[in-house]
Image (tube, rainbow, N blue to C red; front, side, top):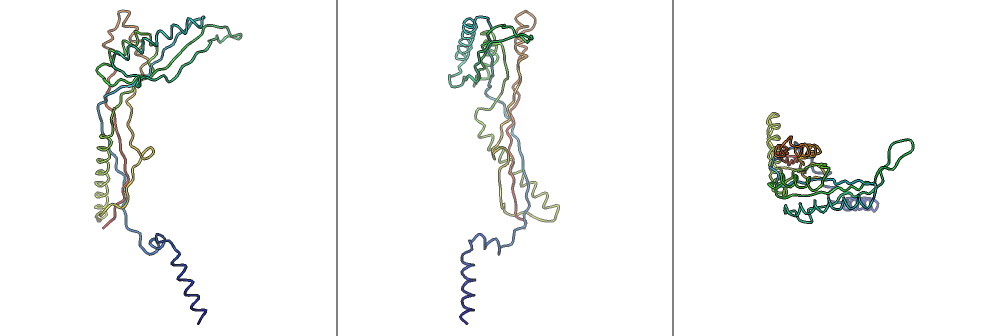
Length: 247
């Protein structure tokens, strides 16, 4: 009798020691679910542009190459400030000074090269065409890229998310109806994408050809007004995964 009592007590202690979620998982049946992914995209006209610009100078005398480079950069900064670009929206991403040699068997010194890459974030697109022309006149000899962006994408992200959720529900209803079922309350929902965040697609234009077009215009061949880069639209996408209970 005593042994039976001890055995029952031991079983009771083991059950009590189990965590509540474990008990719930053992005794609650898994609900019948339908899981779908909803995606949506909102296209928005950009309201700012990021210019990646290169300034390069060469001379056999390092001091002369550096002086020419500094003069061009100062003109670039002055033109950007005149266009209303604040200091926090101008950033140097690369600065390099190095000797340049020929590719001959015995390398021959050619010149010193001083180069710098600068990013300029222009918030007023109406000033874009004039600014890029002024920058080229100031001595910018490389335009690496032109990226058109939306300055405050949050409200468009929210709009895209709401559309993605509606798309997921519509898809779940359609699939369930084909199986003679109806959906109930959502069981689980998660955002999908890079780190679970929404992605803003950059409308990027490689613009090295702009330098060539501008040089040709100064020779009297082509008007700079014809060398315009159209900003197009920026796509803001959302993707969600939702599981609904089946009724």
